[in-house]
Image (cartoon, rainbow, N blue to C red; front, top):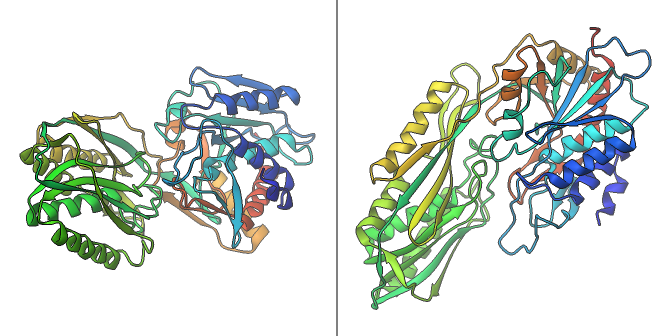
Length: 486
């Protein structure tokens, strides 16, 4: 299906990426990719283990002459974010990801590509299968459910890994090497709302904010991208001020780590106000486009008449709910005082779901300072506790404290300079990485995270810059040759 990958180099890496694209691997449903990994190891007579959390570990002996080098862990996660455009019929439980090339980037058709972290999986498999590479003993750790809870890394058993150095193959900027990351937690809101029979003298409209880029709620939170939920809620908030309205639905978004791309509201206006309401929608479309012209050029507001629903939220409760959503923060909360242009603390208003009786809201907070992460989570909670909602915080995951004197960071930066005659950048990342949890269980592990360039991850705009993949491969091979002695 993806024959174009056969034309790309390095051949072995792209071959395995093609294999990964064929295997369904939604978060919490990694059974098929795990079976493939175990079969791969068995065919090559490599030691293969699986722990209670579902993580798979494959060990490969050192190449001759490298037996006395420190053991290296190649670490990646097998699951992917499953997002698609509304018109897509793709079934992530069974369909392969279809890809094409645009201007030097590899993209999928109306879905996430899954290069996050399928490219890391492919690289680990290619290294395990390549007997021409020079390296010490290797452990390839394939963790599960990174995207929806880091449960694989959280459940990783202690005293399982023998390695002293870990290469996390799950970053998205060629030439940038990450030595620290933010911690994160989710704040979940549940609110039971009251409904009433829909009055007969209202005309209803189905309103959509769509065409937004979405993106990663860590990496992309500082790019000024639109949040479809916040946009459609703002529109409803203003409509309540200008019209006699009835609200039946307000929902959108999906995953905690994806900025919402689409959201909709079903809103009724008093009969006779229809024409003024349509002009109001046009006005707000112009406002949104003007405010987000640089970051969201494809933003659209679609408003179509629809059948009246059987019930609506009572007016008082609808206003309370819309006020709470309006008040709830989204985006960058604080920039770092110590690292230039680095987001310290942020929150993502990720999803709203209604079932006719209650609403469930998902938000996600990140920070490199634990106390500020908790403070922002409490701020989000307070917005909804004011209307009597139930609020729950997840346990979250720890940050990874940067070590500027990391030996593996020096090795990888020296290798990068040697290969490409360019100056590398070492920094921390606002996104969450499994290194924080792994570091808790293996406190002496020397870790670094890197990868080829990707953009738009966690959205159907996800794309992989093809020419950085070969650099990623060459760099990894060079680093493995230069691992120090035990």
